[in-house]
Image 1 (cartoon, helix red, strand yellow):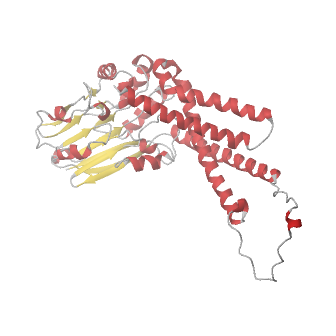
Image 2 (cartoon, helix red, strand yellow):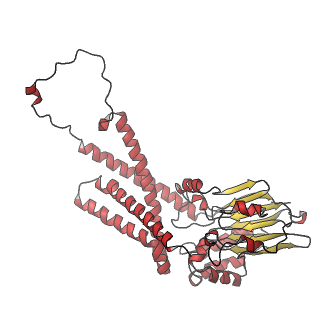
Length: 412
């Protein structure tokens, strides 16, 4: 399980940032745009109502799973708030540059042009006269504040609308070929459909799963691999939606490994439920795919984040008893340990977890944090594919990181 201290620190940091963002939005969207008390009070109430559920959503969904849908609405607002913050910062920066260029805010004095001799210094009597401070054009400042707020709302609405459309749009199909060391000629062209981070929950349900199964079957895969984070809920609530996976058609079957989200909802219970549906659940073990005419090992490990727990990532256990001369494909939810897995002889690793950032600007942050954020990577004869995910988590947004179904074709 996650460390309580780590969770508390994470909650405090994220909570402080969330409160700051909402205070900033209130100032820019309400306080700066009008002096009317009713308008400002409306902003205070509205942003407080939006902020509090967002702060409590992570805890509430674990204590009251039935409240998960309310949490999704809060996370949708989180996406809107991010885009409002970016738009306000961008437009505010433009205003600042324009003001500086025109010499406003007293930023730099213009160089005096050559002209007549300066006037004589004023007398003491003249200095005794009080000079009024420069006036501020309140109407102009208010107009600019309203224009900035309006532009930010329009920009955030447009990006959010596109992101929601993209999130609910069918996943794109990306096809890649990988030359797998040691793969027998008999298995040349063997295909794997890779799914990851589906996040079946209050929004992604049976209709989405039926469509996903149909699209996967149309690719005519030899094997289906699901690399974790398939669910956000209990077997009782989501069993019907997940049962759609029984309709996947692949001659070598459908194989599943745990992601970190399975542990939030009792990974052991979900593993038993999926086994009951006919899926092969690989928990730190391997199976041989093929026959005497040609075979490779499919290796599966539990999620990397649980490596210190009693049932977590254990590559050594998964490889125990394996013929090291046989070709191998590793299923690991996170791409964290690829370097070690490659040295252990894994020719290909299939992972997910990162979502490719899911939506801008987190796409940039994930790219900076993760060495292998999304796509195909190669190191000598060893390959890694990191999926952007097939569904979405948190805000139902996909901007600059579309969901995907990956078809991997193995070459001898």
